[in-house]
Each structure stands twice: as structure tokens, then as C-alpha cells.
Image 1 (tube, rainbow, N blue to C red):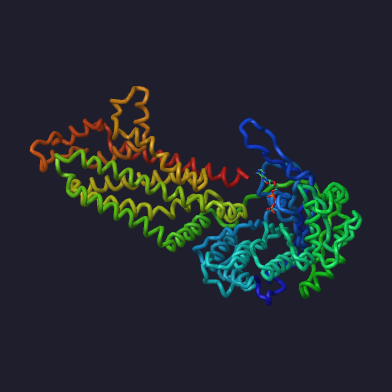
Image 2 (cartoon, protein in one colour):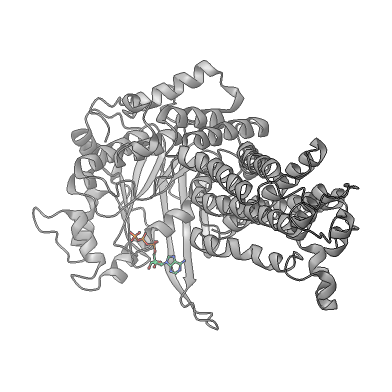
Length: 615
Ligand SMILES: Nc1ncnc2c1ncn2[C@@H]1O[C@H](COP(=O)(O)OP(=O)(O)OP(=O)(O)O)[C@@H](O)[C@H]1O
């Protein structure tokens, strides 16, 4: 994964050891989850049973265990990613403000080059305390150290699996975190790349960081490189110590690792009960992770192994803390870059991605142009004909529906796909949710407005609406805010649910408002109890706005062209027929804008819930 010439110091500028000792301690951590999803069941099952432990700066700690043992759950709790559903104390000392969590799936932006991704991360994570020259130096240094310089101009989406993992690490290294959590950093890598990946983690730890990762099944070589093994079996800690102490520990329980057998494999076999049920005895022997007896041999044995396995790696003195410190923890949410800077950098990033995503951007613009032309051809020049007022009304109704559905769908699908990346970046304190949300709204605005303008311009002039600039601007403005309002519904749907649910429920959420738009049944013909629904139907407000822009404001009588007799020569008579004579354009615009702001605020709080609280 990393070239053999990886410098021993990952970052020449980073301190070899942090001023404050870095350590992660946890005590009596118990975690339970819902055992059954049947309606009345309140049953829960425990997946971690009061485990304890203490991981130090300057060491590489691997949380091991078979599938389902609780490794990811424990890592999520330690990293602060999981905030609910567990009991016990967790403390990240000396690094609670500078910790990062690199998740199993590579949450990268596929349409940014490696250098762009690094520059953006540097702008957000280093803030204004660092000038441009220092920032570029930092980025170059990390890219060199992780062997990514040759791929600096490659799109992140085109990198190999190993390179993606390195980029994920490089992005987090920018602000020199003190504690690094990795969930299965070697998953999906071949054996040679896995070795290089673990060597990289080891090097990171040797600079004083506490590096904690979950590993499934390390090879014998990799196993020896680890400083501290924390093994979980069915939610119990059955070994907490140096790899070199494992055989002696197992020997005390009558378990002997066969010669030439990988001790890591042997340990997993024991966890799975292949040699009988040793979990209770082993867990008791290491006091469910509390005992430091097997950790203390780390300084002598592990260093010797390291120097033979890893080359001349300078070993920092592990920071031992025999007793757990007072366990009080918090995840401080501070951001290095100012709010304005965060928004600007994020707008730039989203802008680059929108421009690079040729298909999505061009198809959005093209569809609006093509549908506009089709409507223009089918309803050519009908707008000025008194005999075609109902057909013209159909054009206006269709326009509102088209603008609404197209805007809603684009967001209901795109937004949830971004969520894992936003979750990771926000958790690692790159930016605030507010900054992201504002940037996202601003960045997409030009495209959504362009789509609505293209459609409205084509339809307005081809379908023969009144040749007056004021009416044209009113028509187009109403089209724009209709699409923005529908887009905000798309955001809300996208932020609240998964893509599949959003695809189904997004369009369905518009349907009831179509019913109360007045197109099928007028408010005056509907039951009394249902009339208020017409008033609050945003779709009706949008249609009324378009109708007012075309037929309202004392429009002159229409010529009767296609028929011998035209009933609606007077536009006012037609407005009365539609029950829209009393409505003003301004009222409809105000209603749509207020509803737009309301939805935006709701979506913001849903986003906060999804990213911060629902863990
Ligand atoms: N939200 C949840 N609801 C129900 N069960 C859960 C939930 N989260 C985790 N579990 C269960 O808890 C156990 C531990 O899960 P966890 O993901 O921590 O295991 P793991 O050791 O990381 O496994 P793997 O190596 O396969 O990723 C599993 O049996 C899993 O099914």
C-alpha cells in the first residue's frame, strides 16, 4: 500500500511526542441493543458485558475478535461515534479535541482529485492560523509520506482500494490528530497491501499518537507488529496484552498454540469455541480487560519484535497509567476554520463536483429545455387565444407539476448518498452542519434557477403568453420559487430517509397537494371541512401565481381565434371561473417563500438529528 521508502517520521513537522500524554481509557462498558423488532417487545440483548481497558499514546492497539464479537460497537463507543445505548465510562485524555475516526467504508468524494480533496481538507482543518505556503507544504508532505504524490491529480473515485484507504488517512492527518480510530483498515486489501497498511498505522503510533483499530484476522507477521491486542469474544474481553504474552496466557488455561500455527488464528478459534468454552475463565483472568498484567510486558518484548519486523523504528516510551483517571468525557465541537470560510470552501467543493458530474448537470438542464420545447410545440401560440384558455390553464398546471417533480427528485436521491461522507467529516470536526447546509443550498442554487429559467422562457414565449416583460418576469419568478420549494421538500425527504424510501415517498408527498390544487375540484365544490386544505396547498399557491401572472392584473380582453364563440374573452371572467379572482401574485409569492424557509429550517434540524444525535 505504501512505497517501501516510507519515511520513518510520517510528518516531519509533527512532534515526536505530544506534550500531554495521550490515552484512551474505558471502564465497565456495557452496551445493549433491541433484541426483537416485534411491535410490543421491549426485550434487549447485551452485546458488550462491562468491558474495560486502557490504550496508550505511542502504541498500536488492535481490537480483535470473531465476527459479531462487538469490535465495531466498542470502537464506535470509544471514538464517541456511538452516543446512546451504552453504560460505563470512556475517557480520551490529551486528545479529545484532536481525534479522528476513519470508518470502514471509504467516505471520499469520488469527483475530487487527490490534491483537491487534500487542499479542501487543509483549508477546513487548518483554518486561518496557517498561511497558504504552509498549507501547501503540509499537503505535499503528507502526500509524499503516504506515497500518494504520483496520484495527486487522479480522481479519488479512480484510486485503488489501498490508495483510497491511504487518502482517507492522509485527509485526517492534516491537523495531526493525537488519537486515531480505524474500523477494519485492512478490509478488502491483499496481504502485501495489508502489511503496508499496518506498517503505516505503526509509524503513526510511533509519533506519540494512540492508534486504535479493529482487525479481523491478522497474519502472524502483522500480529507481532501490534503493540497491544484487545480480544473480544461474545462481548467479553478475553485477552488484553502484548502479542508476545499471548502463548503464556493461553498456556495458563491449558491451551497450547500448535507450532507453525498463527497465534491470531488460534485466538479466534478459541473465541469461536473450537477448543471448548474458555471464554468465562479467560475473561475472569484478565478481569474483563481491567488487568494490566499482560500489557506490562509490552515495553520489553514488543519493542524487540518491532525493530526486527519494521526496520529501525524509533519507539516512543509508552505512557503507562496504572489507575484509570477520573472518567469524565465530552466531545468538544470546535472548528478550526471560521463559519464564513467553511461555507466558502464547501461551496467551492460542491461546485467542483457539480461541474464534474457532467451527466447529472447536463441532463437536468437538457430535460428542462427538451420538455419546454415539447410543451411549446404542442401548445404553440395558444396563450393569446380566448378559445384556448382551458388548454392554456393545462399548460400552467403541467408547468408547476413538472418543475416541482423534477426539482424534488434530484435532491431526494442525491442528498442521502452524501450522508456517510458528511457524517464522517462532521464527526471529525471539519465543519459545522450549519455551514454544510448553507453551502449546499447556495451551491445548487444557480443550477436549479437555470433549469427553471430555461423551462419558463421556452414555454412562455412558444406558447404565446402575453408579450409583456413584467408578466414574463412574474411567470419566471413563480417558476423559480416553485422549483426551489419542491427542491426543499426533496432535501427534507432526502435528509429523513434512505434513498429507496425517498424515491418512493418523495413524489408521493406531492400527490395530496395536487388533489387540493383546485385543478380537479374547486374549493367551492368541496366539503366545508376540506376547504382549508386548498388554502394551505402550496401547489395551489404556485398555480395561482402563474395564473395571476398570465391572466391577472387587468389583462385586456383576449381575441377569439380558434372558435366561433369564446366564452372567456374576459380574463377576469376566467379567473372568477377558477375561483382565483381575489388572489394576488404577492400573496402567493409570500406564501411560497415562507413555506420554503419553514421547510429549510425543518430540514436543518432533521439533519442535526441524523448526524449528531441518532448514533
Ligand atoms: N443496532 C443493532 N441492533 C441489533 N443488533 C446489533 C446492533 N448493532 C450491533 N448488533 C449486534 O451486536 C453484535 C456485535 O456487532 P459488531 O458490529 O460490533 O460486531 P463486530 O465484532 O464488529 O463484527 P464484524 O467483525 O463482523 O464487523 C452483532 O451480533 C450484531 O448483530
